[in-house]
Length: 563
View (spheres, rainbow, N blue to C red):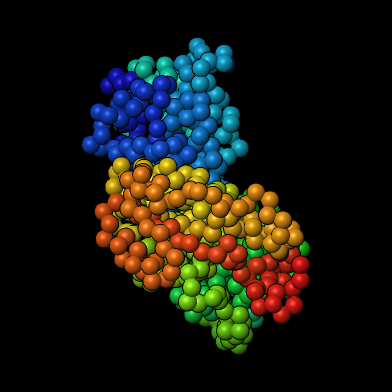
């Protein structure tokens, strides 16, 4: 049948099972929005307050559900406002399809009003960027975009469509989505056997979990693998929930703000088994001294990650779920009681701790954990609050911790929380933000209020850019250059003005009361938690230092570390 380009866009979205789109209309994309209006009973459109909010919401929807997130924007500034969200998804391997419209084909390249080469702009931060200038290629391009976004290592794809293509007509034939094949043709018996042999010879193995475990849906396979290897486990921010944070073998996060048990354990182990992790600098610290006593085994779907940051003794390239399914039966049941007891002793000697009884960042996270029984989806922005959320909330299921790990995008969490809540309406969703982050995209509270999305926005408010101030305190002689936010902004009044319930809390008792009220709210709730400006995230390894040199407040007080 003959359809316009706009009709084809909508039909292709329906083919792919898309039920929600996040976006913001404008001139060049009006044809598509007009068609969306006609199909509003089939595809829900969430009008965000800003295009960046749309891209973050689509990202949060994708991370929470495992489906492809979809966002839309018009040409020029509408399209460029998506860029930060697209880059965030790219760095964290999130399947996203961003659809933009551009000026008509005869006007391209003529500095037309609101013209931008968005496909060129996003080329380094997408798996693929398309510009569709021929309507006969539109349907196949959209179908291919969804396939690319989900296949192999997931990531964002951009489809830019000229306005004349959205209006022209061509023949459309419905097609079923192609099955996304698992990336398994690179898994070899030789690689599996080499890794199995190294594991069976190891006396002090440590298992390191990254986001690839969650992307591949391999949590159960990972648990079986850990039980077989009988080794302590650590993770990245992106890996949280891939292995239960309540399991006795879980030793906490690794890296700059990882636990001493994990940092010291990885330094002392003789075999580090990295599964779906990319060895970020925030994890490794000084790479020349990272896991210096260990042979490193790396299991990852992306061949480009192998030996990129850390040299391996052996590796397996392939989908983590399939790799573990094949690898685990090849390993005889291992026992490492003495090694595990040694690492657990570190956990007992160096527990995460803070000043109990007062309102602090860690206390806020622990109260949220108690109030939700550990069952909520937690999104975060970036900074101290993000680290506290990683340290003090125990994630037992995949897709329950959503954060910008690779790009470190301030202002990410609120949009992501909206997307996660819409994708998982049966779950309670909390966004944890610092006051610096909340300022960046707090206008999305209006979005949550418009649609009565019952998210809980917790602002850990220290009136400073907390993580930057922490660095300034420790490494820059307390020269607080442009990090003090002690002005007249009242987040309670602003949030109420945007349509949310809002509470300011200054004590644990007030926080508990606010959380109780939030639990019964029908729409968004903002809880503004006032904490001290000099609360810090510990442990910490200094920039460029080996992770075994991590320190905490006691080390500073006892003179073990000086600045």
